[in-house]
Length: 314
Ligand code: CAA
Ligand code: NAD
Image: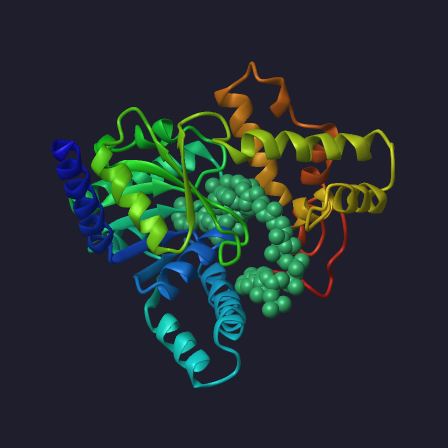
């Protein structure tokens, strides 16, 4: 008993030390997810560098972050000085860059949130592996790609894990932490402790298709696209039915527009490659048509619905 108490005390102390160890965070990708992750990391006291290959995307992300931090501040502190201080201190911890390699030189943790494409992610991590210090932990926010397949591009399999956040990151409380068969326990403990420091509720998961949530959630979304394609009901009635019938905050088609139709499509494509025998991830023809018509969702102003005046990346 004393032995176990001793071990528990030691592992708690180690976890606390590791949480403290992650101070400098580099987030690669400044799209919907990268901007959200960078924002919450800055809000929770980390020194953050947010990187994107596209300087225009960085500028747009900075604007979205400023708007979102103001909403968070208003909710936490109302309108007074405390809210202003929270916003200015959070923003002062956030830097931006278009140079991924230079941005990892003093990183304790790199969280990748770029386009959902295995080849692109591997190319990025292979470059970062040569530039980052030995202690730096790498994590991917991929929705669908096996973490071990991305980690193959590096020589730090023990310091590589999955950190799957949910959209919108400043609001959604959950974080899935994924440990591959090669991820060390020290790395898993460190990213878990960091996730807690980010204010998230943590669940642990093996490196399996869609982890926990997307394994259930993406097939549900695809079923709703098929309902529309089969003209079972109008888009508005499908959304209203699910929203009120299941008490969900958004209808599935509205939510698909919010998440990014291109991202959902890429998730399905990556799944088809990695797990060809799983029928639940087959791409509905309507989703293919939406991609060919460039209907990528709210972020570009058109998806299942039109959002001329509310383009997220505008
Ligand atoms: N930043 C900061 N705060 C925000 C915010 C943002 N971007 N968006 C919403 N909020 C907060 C605000 O504080 C707001 O409170 P106030 O009214 O005080 O400002 C509160 O949330 C409610 O926001 P809204 O009134 O604008 O709208 P809403 O009530 O419809 O909530 C929503 C918006 C949070 C997005 C909600 O509709 C929702 O939860 N939708 C479902 C999202 C979801 O299912 N996400 C998971 C997707 S799966 C995934 O991410 C994984 C994957 O790999 C694909
Ligand atoms: P997004 O399209 O909004 O943003 C992707 C960003 O990555 C773009 O700004 C792009 O310029 C940048 N990028 C592309 N290649 C790059 C490179 N080599 N180096 C640096 N930047 C690069 O995508 P998103 O919705 O933020 O998704 C990002 C990741 O998060 C994907 O892996 C996705 O599956 C995952 N994810 C998405 C959601 C969601 O709801 N959208 C939820 C959870 C996880």
